[in-house]
Image 1: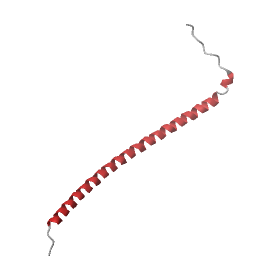
Image 2 (image 1 turned 135 degrees about the vertical axis):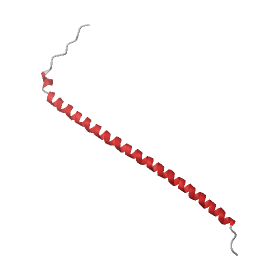
Image 3 (image 1 turned 180 degrees about the vertical axis):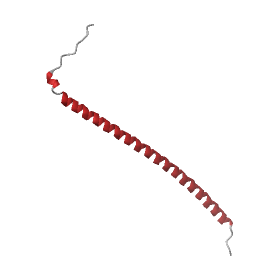
Image 4 (image 1 turned 90 degrees about the vertical axis):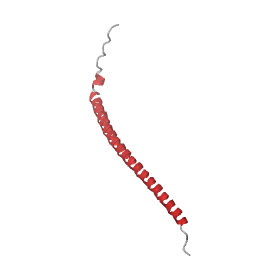
Length: 87
């Protein structure tokens, strides 16, 4: 199999090289900005996950407190029913 040679540089394209280089630089800058944005988003998501975990813990404590209050109230009602009214 014979080796293929690259075609000669077309001078029409050579004049467009600065434009292409500018476009590549622009795309590279856009990619860097997108990477920065992704980093910010990842940190934001981590913060939201932490806040969500804290809220879950708070809700669990509130539910436990509500159950405790309910049980105490039930015991008070039972105790009040056992007491004879004063005549």
